Length: 209
Image 1 (tube, rainbow, N blue to C red):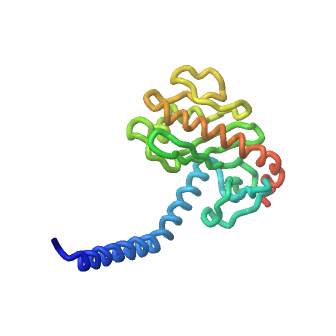
Image 2: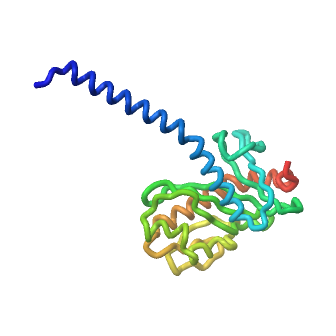
Image 3: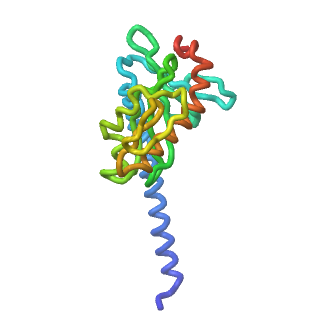
């Protein structure tokens, strides 16, 4: 048998080098990752709120009060994005939401129009659902039609494909029921939590201050 002392030294050296490489890689890429995440988030807001020329990021404090955030990254608080056109007219808000899907957590954003209490758009930001099945929640055109005018005054729920009867229901994708239901859960949970805060502060949000 080989002496244990030299073997321990070799393993220790290799472990140390691996640790250093991991730290260096993380430091050198984290800024780029955050920048890319900010670009993706802002592009999603622009897509969800057509005509957008200006956006303000509002963070929700534990007290329920709002504060304006300087950027996408930096503070671990619930937040939403208020959008305005070139004349300063309020267009609506884009809200972040997430829930557990089939493979992992699905992260998304949706457009909400407070004056009409409807959802007018939905976009997946990050997911690891099954290719060709669950991941269709981010690309299926018929599924996207659910969110053109989704009623948010009733509990939002996902129903079996082909059985949608009410404007607050989401018609599931055939073969991707679990992922479709995750979308319904995340929207209902987010609407229940965020819309009362938005409506309470709506005059301020419309003014953009």
